[in-house]
Length: 555
Image 1 (cartoon, rainbow, N blue to C red):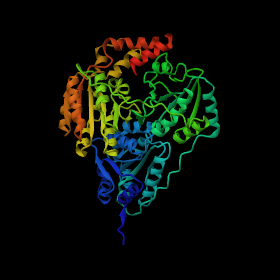
Image 2: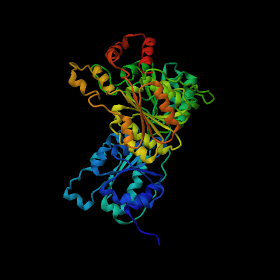
Image 3: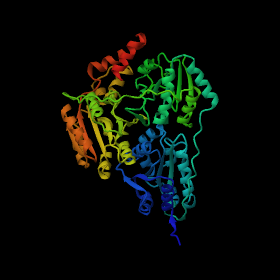
Image 4: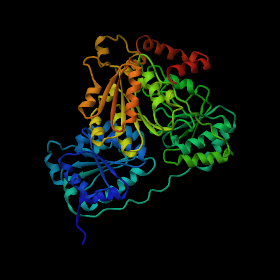
């Protein structure tokens, strides 16, 4: 006779049977029965995070690399609220995830205890398609199955299942089976015909790839179209995950600065999106456009976020008779070993020089990473994860998830000093789980990107009080010591030679390592003051000159 399960045990079984193998947790009292149920299911890995933003960011990084959801375990509305920023990044990245959020017992809610809050309202910010509070132990696993179905249907999304304590400890629960997710649809024949006609028109055409279109199968199909018809390939500014490097089709990312996007798209007459939105400015600026598709440019959508990008692109390839066309592939090349005084550009150069094949780069270097794409373009094949939602503090937690999803692949996280302070608790989890992550912290003692934005928005009378809100010089941070205090091997470097030795050591020794690189701001002083004037002048300059300037500023 089989042993009766309580709600938490049956929920655990439902998750594991559906392929959920990792739970990133920061539990409290309401979640204790779920925590206890972890021991009943050997297939579920439990990873403790010391801050909810680390748990949610780790689940994001895991899903990007594993291609399936992880679970988070969060404590009530306050715990969910602490994790919102990285849930926002995951939502913008169309990442599958299931949040299990503990709640007070159903009969306790009416007493409005200290931690009582409206969890559903908090959750809808980041999982608007699926938020549900399970009302009984009998319904719990059915609710979980619905949550997992929603999370894994294209476009992937975040599901939030709220678990009252009495529903968790209630007896007699039965696991539920998650139905097979239906295949994503393919672009209609009429759309294919319309886009093929536009490409054959001879007008300058570009394809903007995003989401799943930046994985190898879709990239190859898009590159065939590009090779046969001269179509320019762009990637969205902040890809969820992009496969790149030697042997893969090179794709130019849309710039962060709106003025540079104008340069990239200036002569484009047909723009075809594939699992991507038309480009818009990251913020609004006085007197500048927010919608960045050029006036008079025809916009086409080959595949929406609900559709299969690879099959849709293959359908276009067939319509254009480009199946036998050889796609242009990135040639293998590495930058030389950096020497002399340390700069952010030289750090990116060192990464390109030393990174192993099949590395996973997590890019949250912000302004310090301006040269990262160029320095790693011809490096051995690798994946890159970027800041999809713009909410900083993603990089270190995402590295945890990527390392757990791909334990045999080295993870290299490039992180700004300001962003590292948002979720530095991630270092403890890296040490506790002995994860193969090399974190490179760019210590320039500044929120450099905000100093640039201060100039760009046209703010007047910038005084010392305003400037003090945009730098980190008030107290001296030491990330190497911070890492050591959390069990991670940490070292501080001040020269290129020291960096070379430290990076070589880190990549040859499995386990977590942190390298604190002492660098000046990439755009400081005169460069920062001149940049707004250069950007303002771009529309009046010849296109070849503007593109040369763009390559210099942000290749």
